[in-house]
Structure formats: structure tokens, C-alpha cells
Amino acid sequence: MGPIGFKELVVILIVVLVVFGAKKLKTIGSDLGSAVRGFKKSMNEGDAEESVKQLKADAEFSEPAKSSEKSEHKA
Image 1 (cartoon, helix red, strand yellow):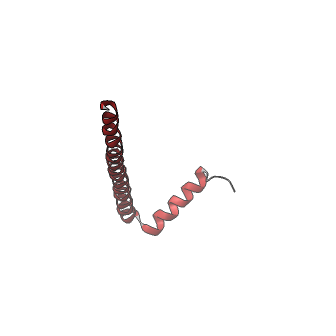
Image 2 (cartoon, rainbow, N blue to C red; image 1 turned 180 degrees about the vertical axis):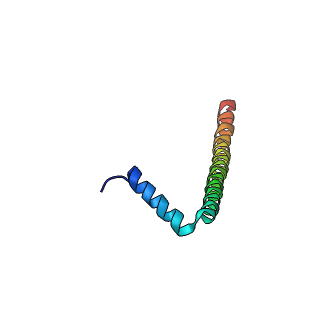
Image 3 (cartoon, one colour; image 1 turned 135 degrees about the horizontal axis):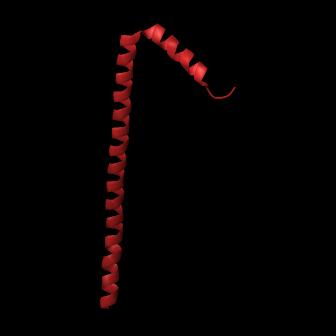
């Protein structure tokens, strides 16, 4: 069982068109597209928020080390 070929894809698309109809298929396509866009947007926002949290955590971790280094140099 190999990958789906061009002929199989055409048959599947024709069956979907017959079952749902042209108007419903257009609606389904636009709904699916907006769902994918929303998913990508939420994934990017989640990555951005996670990156900000990681940067803040790194900054908090490195600041105490810097202050202890300064106190060691004074002594």
C-alpha cells in the first residue's frame, strides 16, 4: 500500500463533492482554513509567551550570580 496517487485523489475529491455539494464544500473549506489559522496563531502566541517566560527566568537566575560575583571582588 503506497502513497495516494493522483487518480485516487481525484476520485476522493469527486466523492466529497457529490456527498456535500459545492456550496457546503466551500463553507467547509473556509471554516477549515480559519480553524487552521487560529491554531497557528495560538501556537505562535504560546511559543512567544513561553520564550518571554524563559528569558525572565534566565535573567532572574543570572542576576544573583552577578551580584555575588561583585561582592567577591570587593573582598
